[in-house]
Length: 148
Image (cartoon, rainbow, N blue to C red; front, side, top):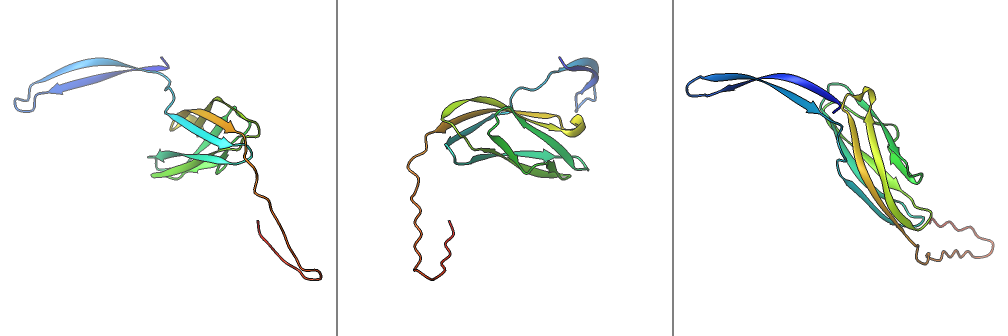
């Protein structure tokens, strides 16, 4: 348990007005994973998924985004959510080697005002197929521009 709170409870029978007072102790513990983020991609190509965070407060809240995997990045960085709005954070994964595994993604609000959001990241990196061949043709003595 991270914290506990003692609360007073009043149960009222609406038709008769009878009531019963009571006391309850609520225990709070740190939350588990809010969900699983699945990232399935090809080596050297970016894949992404989005996480949405709602800010019910009257002031903006900034978040610190962390993942132990060196090939996972976040955008935008820094991430902040304006008052009474939803903010969307992109989790980006660009693998450099073939493999699969699990990591933890954590979004921690500044001063813990909205708490910490934890996700489990399940990633898979498959081998890249044949890359498309790029060709560029230009007549002698002339300029040509091609965008890739």
